[in-house]
Amino acid sequence: MKFIEEVVVEEFLPTYRTMLAGELRDCGLTQSEVADLLGISQSAVSKYAHQEVEVNDDIAADERVQALVEQLAEGLANDDMSRVQALVETEVLIRRLERGDLLARLHEEAFPPLSGYDAPLDIHDPEGDLRMTERVRSSVRRAVRTLENTSGFAALVPAVGSNLVEALPDATTIDDVAAIPGRILDIKGQATVPSDPEFGVSEHVATLLLTAREAGSDARAVVNIRYSDALLSELEAAGYQTAEFDAEADLETAIAETVSEHPDVDVLYQTGGFGIEPVIYILGSDASDVVGTVRDVV
Image (cartoon, rainbow, N blue to C red; front, top):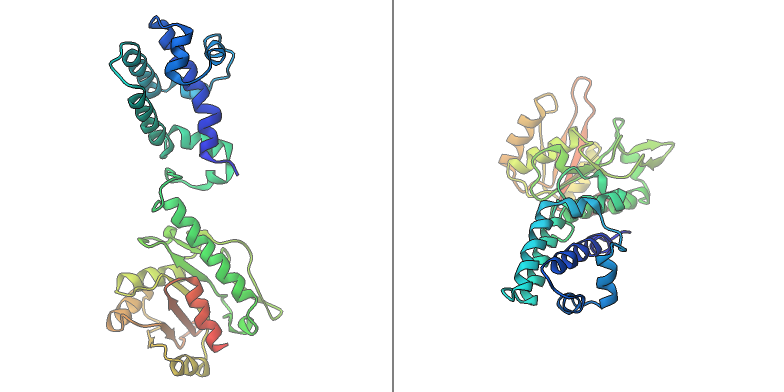
């Protein structure tokens, strides 16, 4: 792992200190005075002044960095700015550059796994998209692993395959829903998962979940399994609320109408139609909750 703090220490600080030390020297300060203001040794100031420290050209060329260096150098040299204020102004700029900006981009380059995210990244935001996205992906991954190890689950996989999906809290499109690419399949009596969870790879099950949520359901996860009268009876006997929808109607319309009438529904199902396989959809608060329901009746 490569932390963004490492990018700050290894790329930003040497460049920033080189620029600031040079600007302070241009303001007429001695090497000793520059060292005192920056809290570094005179030998370090000498290295900065003689360009013996490698700088990052992207950071050095950033107009915001240049402007702050000039502002701080003038303020510190004229005693119009305290060292505390200079530190605070620098920290504010660093945080700004970390939030989907220059330092975030350098972090992606230094840690390639981050490059798969299209949205601007704020690595420090506890409520940010990155953290929540990874939590949802991890939730699906753990739950799928449980399904793989659940005896009898393979027999519940429909001919079209199962999928386990979980949505982000504010999901609006299938790109906000994590699922298994290619679906979970029954291969010779073994539930087989082709690859890790991804966002935007499920259309049918993800659409069903999003439609249910829009119609009033609090569910954030769904799994589809093979329908049988016996299985439906077991779910009802276990206390789960079930509701049927028309398999031959438009999916979104049918789900919206059914969930509007039964907003607390735990299990949606359809008994099939012409060329349509009957399927049960189990809803839950997250992927693990859904898998727990499956395990109750397997």
